[in-house]
Every structure is written in C-alpha cells, then in structure tokens.
Length: 500
Image (tube, rainbow, N blue to C red; front, top):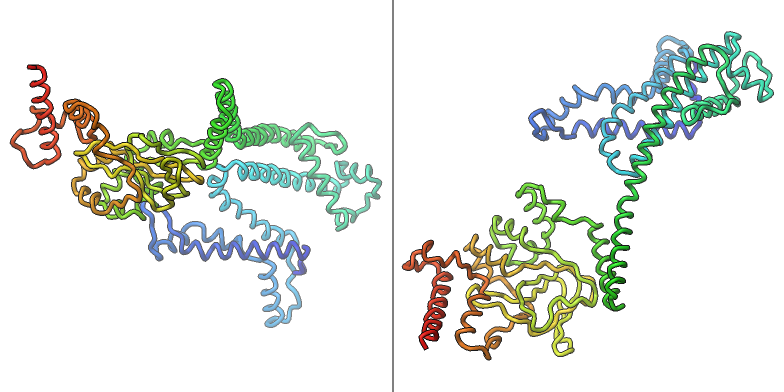
C-alpha cells in the first residue's frame, strides 16, 4: 500500500493538532499528582512517574503514534538499506492501526463526571454521544450493504443506486465522489431508526439486514429514552434558577401592591432585591452551611471576610482562634443608594466596617463627612458603658458592602479571648464615632437612670453576677466587680425609697 495520505489537508491538520495535544498530555502526566489508596496526595516526582508508567502510559503512547510516519520511516530504511522502493501494506491494516485512536475515548471518559455536572456541557456531551453512536452504526450498516453488493446479494445499496438512477457497476463503491453519498444515506437511515421507525426510502432487503435493523431499533429505543429524557432534565435544570427569580420577583410585586407601598419605597425594595440577587443568585449562606461541620463553616467565613481580616489591624493582629470565632459572628450586608443605615437617635449597637462603596454622614440635613472603603463607624463600646444613641444619619451614596460586628457578639469574643481586649483598645480606629454618651438619661430619676444603665450594659449577665457562682472576694475580674457595685448601689437606693 502507498503511504500517501488519503485525507484532505484540513483533516491532516486536525490530526496533527490532536496528536500534539495528546503528546503534551503524556509529558504533563509524568508530573501530575495523584491520590493513593490511603487518601494522601503524592507529589514525589519518582512516584508520580512510576504511577503513570504503570497506568495509562501504554495506552497514551499507542494512541499517539502517527502510523503514516512509521511507514514513511520504514520505507526510508527499506530504500536506504535494502533498495526496496516501497513497503506494501494492506489498506485495511493501516486503517485498523489508525482506528486505535478510538481508545483515546477511554481516557477522556475518566473526566466526564467533572463536566456532566454542568447543564450546558452535559447537554452537548449527550448530543455528541448520540451522534457518535449513530456514526458507528452507520459504518456497520454501510459495511453490511457493501458486503452484500460485492457478493451479488440484493441489499439496501443496490436499491439505493437504482432509486438514484446510478448504473450498478462493479467499481462504483470505490468511486471517491460517491463516498459522501453512501455515508450520508447510512447515517440518515440509522438516525431515523433511532428517533422514529424510519420513512421507508431506505430499508432492509434481506435477512441479515433485517436482523441488524431489529438490533438497531432495540438500541435506539433505549437511547431515545435516555438521551432525550436526560436532555429534558438538563434543560429544566438550566431554567430552574430563572424560574426561582421570576417567582420571587412576582411575589415581591404582589406584596408591594397588596400593601400599597408608595412608589419611592417600592423602588428601593425592588432595587435592593435585584442587587441582592445579582450578588447571591438567590442562595442563602445560612441554609447552605446549616449542616456543615464547625471547622468548615469557620474556614468558609474566614474566606468570605478575608478583606476585613487583612486590611483592619484590629483583626489582622488578633490570634488565629480569635479570628476564627469572629468570622462566624461578623455579618456582611449590602446596601443600595439612598438606604439609611443608621438614623439619628438610633441605638448604636454595632460597629460597621466599609469594604466597598461610598457613604455620607448627615447632620441636620447637611453632609458632614464621606465614608469609603477602609473606614469604620459606629460606637467603639466598652463593657462598663451603656450603648449610645446616634448623633447623625449614615446613608449610602452608591452600592456598598458593610461588615457588621454587633456589640453583643463582641462581648462574647472579649470574654472568650481576654488577650483581644488590649488589641481592641489600641488598634481600633473609628473614622466617625456615632454614639453619644452621658446626656442620654439626664431627665430621668437617679434610681431609674442607674437601673437603665445596668440593663443597657452589654456585658451585664445575671448568671455572671450570681452569688452562688462567684466568690465576692474575687477581685481578678474588673468587669464583674464594677457590675456588682452598680447593682449594690441600685439595691440600696431602692431600699431607701421603699422605707420612705
């Protein structure tokens, strides 16, 4: 057989690119890590190479060989050493060697699970699988018809030639111009048999062809159910997220309509809904992580709050355990332009860290400051002091993201990690102090002021000051001592009042 290429230049270029990719893959596999039976990731160069040599190397090597090049090399040696002009090799043998490339599909199939989880890619793979099986059966259908034609047995090829007014001569099957017609007719018959029962223009004419068609129809019935059933599910899954969005959008519109929201408030609610959906795609992190182990939740929270822990010294200098605990207590909130985050006279019970966007501070309707990424506002808070009231409004100028640490959560952290007290006092730099202390309760009676001050104290906890749990002579905890003193003073004043 001649070693001349029987394919077009485009096909040869495609073969060349494919071979280059697979040959490069062989090199990469020698340096690819793997997971052993104990679940350990092996990164040793020698072990990685031995693992690949004992696994897929032989298959990869065989399927990457260009057999035309092998024959060309053999011809060169034969001509140089033995004066043989050309080695004669059977066409079918060369075709069989080329068909070894199909074994590459085994290797590709190993990674299909990584792609079939995604809807569009999975749908494309199902279509390719359907066409590939149709191609394989079409080839067998053509070979069966060709065998019958060469042995003067009436079959589908003979009737195909007659219907298309071709002269059924002996060499008509080898006519290159006729090959695309034979292939398209074979593929057309197989695909119509897969999807329907055929249209009768191409049909079996002898017993072997009829048996083959029965087999094809049985396979086609299963393929039709699997392929089109899977395609239907994938298309429905692809539209599931959009369907959820439309459902929530309709519910929001109905809610604002039934409650007769004013247009300005309705616009703000819709703006916030679209902004949140754009950022979260309707996913609620609390539900997503509800069954996760604690360590995984903390690792995820650390990643989600990575900007805060990296750029604010009060957090970056905290211990690892403290940061992990803080990551589960800090909440991230998104705001839209025009949203008022804090109103004047609101109780300031949190500390806000701006990680994105711009905010403005308003007092008596005038802008007195601008907050941007890296700024902090709120009430610095101390356990022995009550929470203050806001002295200004804080409003979003643009879409913004805030990290919010409630005072109650901070109190929990300061109790668990006493070493964080010093970092909190020295490293927290509040851009704008919102809380107002000292003049909040001036008009109240003295005993009521004392009572409210104790009740509003975030560090106050009745269990912590229970006489049965703590020794009165214990002076090691300043927070508990001061709380006891306040309660004692309150009890004495209330007792004097009762006597009067």
